Length: 362
Image (cartoon, rainbow, N blue to C red; front, side):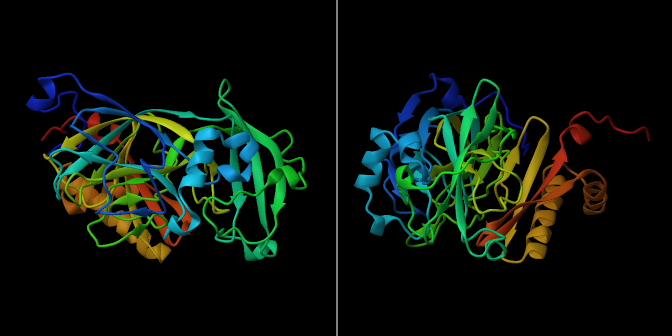
C-alpha cells in the first residue's frame, strides 16, 4: 500500500505501448462551471495512457486581443452564458479511465505545462479577500510572460467597469483606460492547474468553485509539471477534467485570482487499486502534501492535520503518537486559498524525513 509512484504499471499496461491522446478544447470536449457524474466523456483511456490536453482560462476575455485566438472565440460562441453554471471555470474533459471504480485512485503525473499565449490576467475581484477595503472596486492587471527567463511582468492595468459576475466576461479592453503597472517588478512563472478533479458521486451539476474530496478548485501552485496528484475515484471511469490554468499564484490567492493563462498540459493517467486515500494527495520531488477544506479556516486546518495524521500512520507505518510529534516538528501548514467559498489549508512533509531514514539501533 505504498504511495510512492512506481515505474512498473500493471501487467495489462506492460503488454502494449501506452496510447497518446490529443484532447483539444472544443465545444464538444469542454463544459463550463461544473463537474457531473452523468457527463459524457470526451475521451476514454486505459491506465498508463498519456493525454495532451488544452486547458483554457475563463479570463481570456480580460485581454481578448492578447489571450484569445480563433479556437477560443469558437468556444465562447459555442457555450452560451446560460450554460456556464453553477461555477465559473471552463473545463476540458471529462476523461473516462477504463476499469476505474469508486474506491480506486487516479494517479495523474503532470509531465509538462506550457502557456498557450505570452500573456495572462489577474483580477482583483468581488470575491477577493480585500474587496471592501478597496472600496468594492475591481481591477484587471495584464501580465506579459517571458518563458526564456520564466518571469512575468506587468503589461498594463485597468479598472473594470461594474461587477465581474458573468463567467467568461469579455471586457473589450481595447476601449478601456490602460495604466502602466508594476514597473521594475518580476514575478516567477510557475505554470499549474488551479482546478482539476474527478466527478463527485452526486446528482446534477457540482460547482467548480469550491474544492473538495474530488479535487476541484484546490488552487495549490505546486500542482505543476513534475508533480503527481492522487484523486479518489467516486464514479465509474473517474470522469477526470482539468481547467482554471494559472502561470503564477501566491498561497492565499488573496485578490481572488492568480495570473490566469491558458496552458497546454501533458499528463499520464494511471489507475491505482493498491491504496486509498480520503482526499486529494499531492506528491512532488521533495514533499508529500495533503489538503483540508472547510468554510471555517480553523476547521480546514484541523482537516488537513487529520489527513496528515492518516498519511503518516496508515501509509507510512507510524503510530498516531509518533505521527503527531513528527507533524509538529517537520510539517509545514499553509493557507492555500481563502477565496473559493470554502477555505483551504495544505500541509507538507519532506520526503527526505522518511525516504532516507535508517532504522535506529535497538
